[in-house]
Amino acid sequence: MRVAVLGPGGVGGLLAALLARDGHAVTCLARPVTAAHLDRHGLAVTSDRFGELVAPVRGAERLDGPVDALLVTTKATQLDDALDRVPADVLGDAVVVPLLNGVEHLAALRERYPAARVIAGTIRVFASRPAPGEIRHEGELCAVQLTPGAEPLADALSAAGVDVVVRPDEAGLLWDKLSFLAPMALLTTAADAPLGTVRDERGGELAAVIAEVAAVARAEGAAGDATATREFAWSLPDGMRSSMQRDAAAGNVTELEAIGGAVLRAADRHGVEVPVTRRLVEELRARLG
Image (cartoon, rainbow, N blue to C red):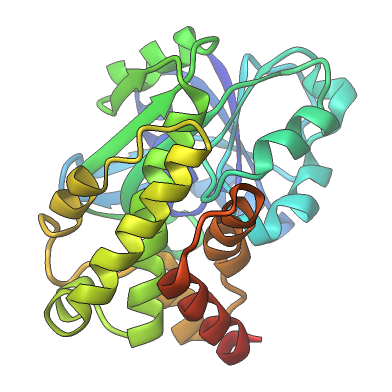
């Protein structure tokens, strides 16, 4: 396949490297310095699951030719600026799969690329980019879920070693992830501590936010299984940290609005009470600006 990856950070860089290692033609769209580095040196991955690998990719500042699929793997806060690298007339009717945090980006992508096939997707993975072209993947988790319409990409990712599920329910797919991500991100950032400390010291709040977000998910048409989400949250390693917490600690712009803000906006639409979630979001808004 011809695959473009917009935002070759931890998530995008890992998937780009795995696809390129499997023989697909991968173009990474990034800022000039990063694009030039990737074009010369490729992507170097250190992974608990996939081992050490270096994969050649093409680096470019803008999409300049047709592709079969575009993976959008920027942070939600960078999406608008990053999309300038993907002209709609060049993208055409390609499959577009955003793997962003939150639930509100699909409408924006469908409006911007009316000829493309924008498919809902999520990924569960703990990956970071210590430096341009360097990807660190922690643990064994690397699971992608897609709605129908991107089967060739799903097959390519599966063959490259990613756990892939195609499921028909867009709302369920998006809210299943947010139902876990929002509680973990909000509490680890509020506590400025890893997940193990949050479970030990603020486990009641974590469970309350899980229940509240699950209620919002049900109002949005998803299953909203709080018990399953809680079991998953308590199964993860003690040292797990959210990307929101890492961004806040580094003084970077966070995805608070895409994650916590999205939950509050959906709760308000449906009249669902989420007092613990609302308090945490409002405290973090005041703290992070």
